[in-house]
Amino acid sequence: MRVTRKNPECVAGPIGAYTHLTVVPKNADLLVLSGQVGNDPEGNMPEDVEAQFRNALRNILAILDSEGVSADGIIKINIWLTEKIDWSRFKEIWSEFHGGTPPAMTLAFVESLALPQLKAEVEAWAARW
Image (tube, rainbow, N blue to C red; front, side, top):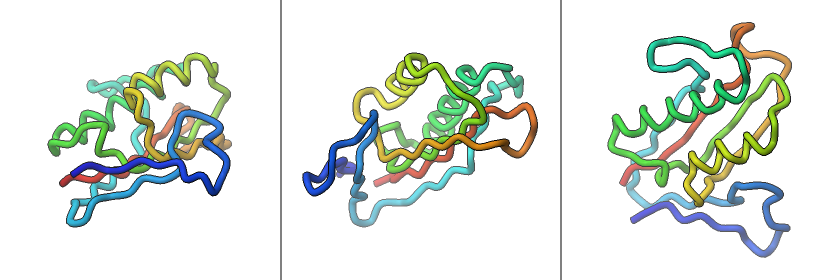
């Protein structure tokens, strides 16, 4: 079984690359990741928001992979950015991450994150069956 992604006709379609509803199969394990920031595997933090966003998504995939779960198992993503991002770059990075089947997603711009150098943080929920 897999998660099912839907855009019910009772509301307007998504305004971006996400799905309104993700249904988790019965008896699936729920994996809840802490917010991942934009450092690389060695702990280096790039200065630009696009690189931090890409690294945060890569960190999510690496953690899920360590549990035998692919991006297809992601049921919800929350993205927090502290500064504007070039939308074409955002769409490119986001599309590479979800591979054409975007999960439910929330994007918010916030004044700051836990440390001053952080410009992106991404939280993920996933299912394993």
